[in-house]
Amino acid sequence: MTETLALLLLAHALADFVLQPRRMALGKRDPLQLLLHGAIVLITAQLALGQFTAPPLLALAAAHVVIDALKARLLAPSLTAYLGDQALHLATIAATATLFPGLAATGLWAAHPWWPPVAALAAGAIIATLAGGYAVGFLMARFTDADLPPGLADGGRVIGLLERGLIFTLVLVGQPAGIGFLIAAKSILRFESTSRDQRAGEYVIIGTLASFGWALIAAYATLALLGALPPLGILPPPP
Image 1 (cartoon, rainbow, N blue to C red):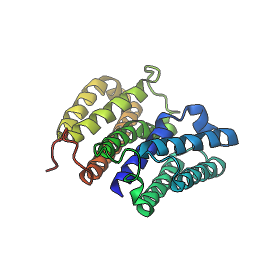
Image 2: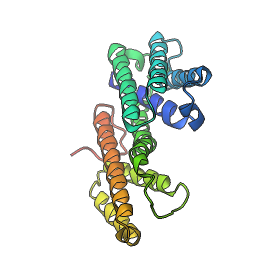
Image 3: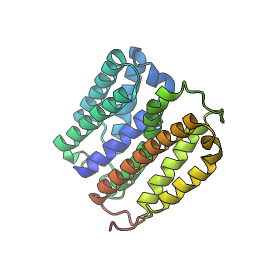
Image 4: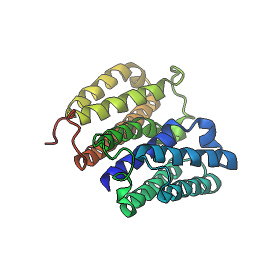
């Protein structure tokens, strides 16, 4: 079951956060865009598992399409809608892995025991960085009307991706203490601009805490999943 879960998580991360362009993400009211996204969901699941005729994957893709269609028509873009949408997707993935635990063991890649832990690691990295970017972006949207100091175009997004990636890596290699140095470095670099403007300072603090918190949750969840899979041999053993 755990192997199937890891592979389905990678397929979901790829379909929702790597292979879904902005136009598709915002155009789910268009049946063509919605069905195209559903096809991507199905294909990534089939490729991840090495299963190309399994009916459960068709059902999983159909459920994904229904969830996205309901969200597009009933909810405005927001952090609550985003988290609810992802929670439902994860619930359908967990249900599929529970009801059909042998999907990975009967797939084309069953002879490669390293594949599920690699998939878990890749899925965790995508969720920590890209998925976290969407979550933090929705959270901070309410503050974008504030008169904040100008910065590089898209600079905040890139900084967020880098810091979440570093946090994820530090936790996975068994060096979470390094996160403290990352916080100190960011505080020093941001000190001049934030110390002169309380609104800018509060904006940075909220965004930083949200970004760090998301990355930590994703990293430790990935460690928990890796602990239930065959060891890769490239990460330190858990304490």
